Image (cartoon, rainbow, N blue to C red; front, side, top):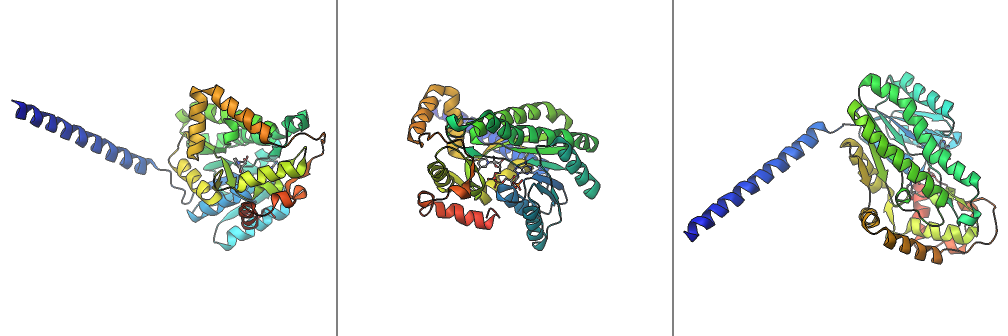
Length: 343
Ligand SMILES: NC(=O)c1ccc[n+]([C@@H]2O[C@H](COP(=O)([O-])OP(=O)(O)OC[C@H]3O[C@@H](n4cnc5c(N)ncnc54)[C@H](OP(=O)(O)O)[C@@H]3O)[C@@H](O)[C@H]2O)c1
């Protein structure tokens, strides 16, 4: 009797394991079958002249896609175009300020006129201001909102008619963990990235029925080399030093190439959201269940950041370089800056 029961339990467990196995294989096959292949696709990357945009451009071109890139600096966008073409990529490069809606419309129409279509829009162009909230004026918030929120919206609105005509489209919005947790000394940036996360999540929900997949990418700090080009306010040298150190530290920041591969995977599989690090995933879960703890932690972090010295002057990161921001792990950021045209 007892043996019969054991046999029957073994049989049931065997069937259950087989069922789970079949489901997993079917799911993997379905994912592969429905995977979006970049080969031959037209991909527009805003801010493709340096940093993450350039790293993404290299990796996406290596998958056989045709590129369109833009930035404000004519020299930098031309340099990126030449480098990408030398490695075999097909590239359309334009100077455009994505905070100007007309320029964004023209850019997207130029891409369609040049290649005949647009398959993917990657809203990557962004701006970072570092400093205490006392140093941040309304203008700083407006600048952050223009680049990190309004520009992605302008580009989405410009691309949507083409995606609808083609009955397919992919949008990737590069937001930030700062769009999930309000980081001290990054307030205009964080506020604008919160807005970008909301926009991206809402677009995902409403556009899926039209076969337009929207992916919200949430990176931690990345070693793109961008600290040199951020805006710093308050105690410039100290603010720049903490940010550059954090953005260079392997404990706190991602390797930019690995981040780009994760972003491409999220794009290919049409993921709703890609939080790129385990710490980012944990932080968002903990914030959901115990927001008070995360609030307390950020308050403690604020106490360790530089005090306000009364200055409202803006400086670029490279103008705030000092002995505090050189040597140690910051070497990794300098190396990334060289590699990704941030110099
Ligand atoms: N690096 C990080 O640690 C990190 C972490 C989380 C999220 N992110 C996000 O990732 C994205 C890329 O960051 P990154 O580190 O690569 O920054 P980056 O090196 O400063 O690159 C920004 C790119 O955007 C372009 N850009 C900026 N404003 C523009 C405008 N108004 N019009 C057109 N192009 C503009 C820049 O070129 P021009 O200046 O010549 O216009 C440049 O090509 C941003 O959205 C950023 O917020 C970065």
